[in-house]
Length: 521
Ligand code: G16
Image (cartoon, rainbow, N blue to C red; front, side, top):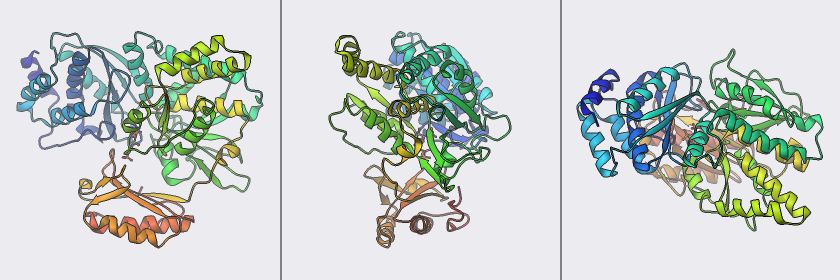
């Protein structure tokens, strides 16, 4: 480690003194102008992680669903997973070290993790379309090179595409080719094979409107569309040519406001979907004949997928984890087949190597009918991005299943009925005063908050309410559901007031929800 060079280059990416940031649910996130030093340092950290694991590590520059002015960085571990929790702590220490402590922190991490500094290191980098992303990814590269790491800069990519690249590189190509064409070809081939077997291939099944949140999803879907156009035609909206990233559009907006994005015309019963800013989440929706909006969120996506895979699943146990796909991913890995989705549309399915091998064998050996089913499963496995939740891959999986089962969007929606619900954000001075337990369904602190929520919940029928600090924005999230939309809105508002009073609310007091929106979003 050339400590002199690190100190010299670090000064060119100086940390604003006193600035403290946490590696949150999915990496660092804050205003882009505060992130230069974090990016440089994450370049350094990625090199150490690569040396330690003797594998390629990924660095993605994105702030996903956050507003355009924000940015962030996520590190990707060898099998395409999110960074291991012990290294999240190292990331936080390194990001917050004052200039004069940098050398000591780097040496500490190397010693604690027994990093062989002579080992080669390789880092792959991707970025989203935010105006700040290009410069910030250059800071990552500076960090990688000053520690002697090799790198490949993929430039503009969706987050799940970078996860895919990392996974491919570390499995010697077994998972797929680590190029953008490799990704397009693998998914599209599986999709076209699947949809060929669908008996319903009318136009209704073949076209889909996609809101791309004015983000990277638009670019990548446009590049990819001709690979799968035989099975599906997509019409892109909010493609970044006019609007601002995630502004009044995208999966997060549609899910939390429960209304369609701006800039998309929807005819009744047309199938529509929204990606988020880095295309790792997807939600579906439609307008019924009476013009009512229906949201189909991650829960219903999971239901569609697991019911399709049911022939293979003897039983479908359900588990809850804390917010963050990194927790769900690990839970799903405990099973032969694990389907996980967050309600916000972030998720995928995982298949164990043993199951994959069994299916591959069955596709060759079994009698006709079973062979057909096994072949279908083989393609479905290829169509999922098993490294990470992926809006493009999930969209193709859903479209294939709908076509194969001959389901309309309304029939899918009818699998079960959601209780009316409302999500709100509350501003507090320090969101860490709220701590939770039981997969974030109960507040432990501040004292009295859970009791207040319990009392409010008792006032409404079929009701539940939860609060938790966000892992990506400086807010507290409130969720409420009840037997009617009016009750859900009231309950959410009352819980927001309790949070405001008991957890140190700042700014304006939460207002009641109006025109189907919460406050302040
Ligand atoms: C990230 C995680 C998601 C998680 C979300 C929660 O999403 O990857 O698994 O659901 O944060 O954010 P919050 O705690 O603010 O509700 P993304 O898409 O922003 O990377």
